Image (cartoon, rainbow, N blue to C red):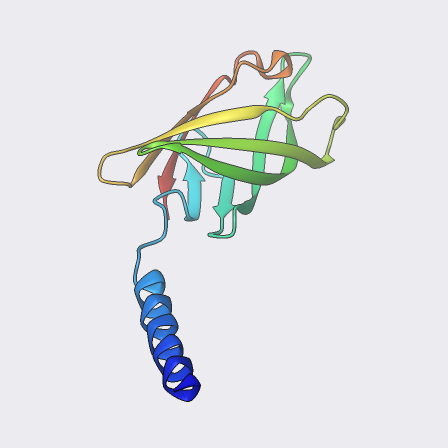
Length: 133
């Protein structure tokens, strides 16, 4: 009798695992390119991690390209909203205090990512839109 229960348990677990693996990834998972600046890139993986690279210029040096690289962890807030918590890992200027929380909404059949932040260092760059690669 215990052998039969063990076989039934294994069959139940294996069927549950196949069902769990049949779900689609959340729509934020994938590679994204910036709409305003095609050099901006973001990769988000299904485990809740990712990387974000942003290129920009600052008012005092408008002809000099700057860039920041961020490690990203993300959370699914509701059906179309995701929260990205960033940690600056490299910068041409400074990573100090440059860890914005970014809120993103999926639009246009999961092909457009509209993101915003109110981080004080990001004035002028509060809105970042992305297209799926």
